[in-house]
Length: 496
Image (tube, rainbow, N blue to C red; front, side, top):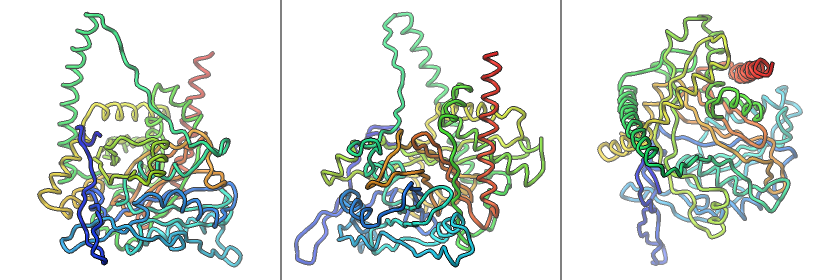
């Protein structure tokens, strides 16, 4: 398995614990990455906001969770600290009613519309944590109709359970295709072209090109690592509505708002083809355009933002190869451990905040930044820097670094590829999927998740910093529309 750029065998750390009856049971210690998420300044929760096409049957949902999800040891184990300060997984009996929460929302007497009611509930949820006396996950079911879905559920996990990719794979392994209830969901796979040329001249050129690519990789990595260190020490993004102001205390925050907007995935692919980019480039381009639109409206400094503003996104990169849904489902049936803790590094991506005449230029600039980052080992190097801090300064020192770097940037950014086709959970067809987090040190987080023919932007904002999050969500839609119209205009011009 690869982690941090090297082949390494990642085995669970085990200790022997005495039970009350004198027998011994093997206990697995939390990985250092998972243990970091229990530090007070790094208490992060992952939430998967799911909209449904029909109201949810609570009993059916509970039965599905018992038969699928609870087979995984992480979801039926406590995280207990022993006398030496080590935290370990201790199996326990799960009372499903403690984890499936169905609040009684007063939709009759409440003057707030259901969209805002659900939004307010999720915001209130962000001010709470999961009781550590039980396995660290729960699901909140809101059986009220909104403009997005007939019902909404919020699946919440503590980040110590594992990285977001592994948890999403585990969750999706409980789903089945709506068109074929016996088949697992299909996730997109990236294909790489392999050259089988054996011509001597071409081989010589390949070696020359590889040498040049290696030199460039080395140079880019050194630059990125130095910028990472500078960010940790002093390099902070320009002040904007999204940056954490000096002296701002997240403990005094009134909560976080979760806003989601859905656009057409087919249109995203059309933009991708029109700009010779990737879907990730298009998503980042839309994000740049939306932030530029919002900041320009707030500051009214058109034409000056690019020169005056330093704006960057922190991306948490999972360094473990993601298991496929099929493999996860098979491992669950065998009661095997699917999630092996957290193994991550950081990548800091510069963003262009400016009012550009051609909306497609946002995608072009995003592509330049993303291509540059692909030629660097920044995520692997930052992983080892975190490990060094962990060994020298313990969990508090490592979490201080992991907390410090994102807080010096404007936003946290991530994207997840969801199922290619429509899926159902226990007979309930899914309308949309919007994974995100709360508890992170940034005031803004943007997640993008594809599902069937849709792509949803999940935007998490700190209420103490951004007072109009729905306006920001609308800016993402307007930016997408303007970029798509520019791509259509380019296509028509090319055809004519």
